[in-house]
Image (cartoon, rainbow, N blue to C red; front, top):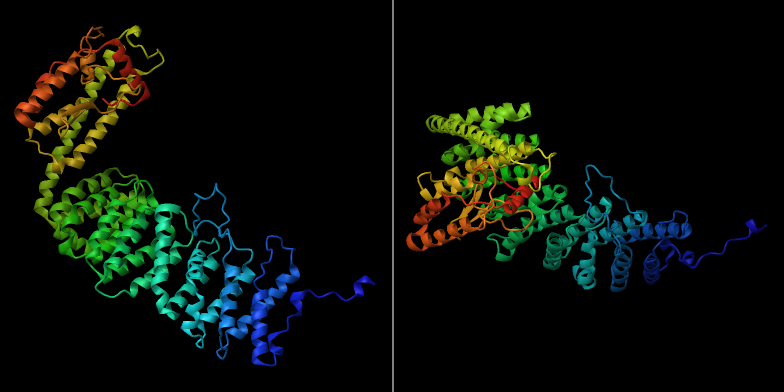
Length: 587
């Protein structure tokens, strides 16, 4: 019997349908009443909660979209105020992103991760559709719309880009596009709101889910800039777009970022030089995926840069291209080698071949011989052959010089290994009491070989990297190189010497300028009363030489002083052994 009793209607069910309105005033009252009712938020976290309210609100929203979106609908202040209030109540909600504090550092990858969808989307979609219909109505006066679209509303609406639901981001982007085309006087404020959000992302927040969609809107704004560009417009390129390349989220929005950068350069081609310089400064070191994106963008920038403006960039670009070719990640190396399929880039290399061939030859030669990927090996060999066709004479001359350098390096490596083996034999002959921090289980030979190999490789990389700037006839630079081989770095600016790495125990070693040969030259360690006399004499002679005769004489004075290696105490050697056992000291 209770089941047959009529159900008591809720207050929101008593609102009549719009089709039953008998006059224009009654229709306006019903529309305002329905808009005020639609400001109520439903609980979508519980699927069984507010079932009737969800159903009635959805029907009311659909009815409003149908009537307000009709071409003959007339807007007034009362209806427009109710529409904006209803949109604000539904769209501007706290906690657009549901990520916890632990997952804030996590970046969603649209290609690998499933998006987190909004539970209230059945209502939100109709709310966004209502706003689109309002902005697309031809009877809407832009002055009336600008009256109720306050700055607070626009700032809050821009924040809706930071939602995890990609469907909502697309609707926000569509609304912003239509808003910019409908109300021209709001464009400067919308642009400034977008720039503020991007600056907050670059320097503060470090995480945002809608940067790609925001850059799409910014690209449309850039496309409307007049030529010549104003200084504040050029600042967008240098202060916003280029710093965006340093974010960890770059793969999620790089396509739109590159589109915006190219739009700027089309407006002002002189910005290509600054863009390439900033790209080289921000080049990733360990993120191979970002590096592939940087290589793609670099190729696009090289296609539009003026060849005459490329002169100051040639050395840096070719250096970075050589590093990419030598990358152990095959995708980075392969993408860099594809540069030779681009005729414009090849023409730049031909025009600047005097800088390109010496820098690129070593990377291509080593890749063609040693790279683990066979495809990269074959590509490197083909590119090396193309590089030889640019200029036969200079290429053959450089190839001969490189072969001589390779032989010299192999000879130096052999001498280095013999020297290490001699030191190892001397260390093994020491008594255990002279090795205070070592036990019988420590493999001294392994320590010496590992540390010395690291040091040799570092010196070899330094030589190959700085050969273009090194003068073999300069006695000062000859001294720096010889002291580097002995494990000491000399600073000409400060006229000081220091070990290549500090002592791991934090205590200074008297006579630290001595090499390992001087420690073991007599086959055992001698205790001395003045272990630091050698270092002090070296410093005195260094300062005296600097005051009397300048840089070259100063180098000769230090060379004479260092010819007599100072002695070391057992305590000092103990510190050195601590460095060796911790793997921190370089020979």
